[in-house]
Length: 324
Image (cartoon, rainbow, N blue to C red; front, side, top):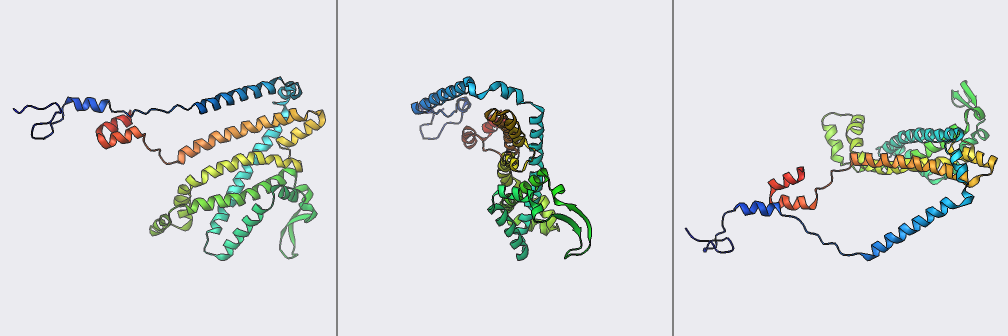
């Protein structure tokens, strides 16, 4: 039997067969990472903590904030009613805006130049004019159309009609302004999502006899959701705060009732803090839901670097590490 040298190889240069020590080496295989000291980061952390503590203390002990008034009105029935109106405005406006956005996006991608021009004009106008102007316009629609009717066009007989002042209330005007404006932004978001899908997906659906509606609803939109959801979540959070503009047309939302209260009790800052705290609660809930939905549609994260190294060296071991 030929003796082995200290390196574990035979005198002729032939490597020795693997022994039990190889398994032990695989077991001890780890990536040793040495982190560089970063004193600047620690100084920044200390400064941020001190500033946050000082700011919190200053706000709490400030006698001009009237925390007793804030606590009194935080769960007041009037405030909660306004909060519910804000939630209603947000949900309904986003639902209508998404419906309009999908329709306009499909029109923008249509082969018909008339549909493309119509959709482009819609997004150009409602994205180019301020939302505040649109809200005031819808609230004062009676100045242009005193009566809204359904019937034969071009001065034909009217089947039913309403007085605009009675039909277009503050809440209805808010829904019209928010929904139509949001539809213009959602149209661009949906269009970008649809265009991110490989055109071959549409061709594959058509090759098996699916209609355009089936291709859009079953193939294109589900794949486009990965691109649509992040900006949609941002739009939803923005809508929660944008509803505060409804206060200029007396929409009975959270900001409107807060204004009515501070005009009555002169606690302007306290009532604004009450409204701000509720807006923070709503946006926080929406942010958490957005992150959860994004994780649902996001691509699976790559395995850790250690697992990728193990996979290149010992595939069987990598599977065990990944499973654990």
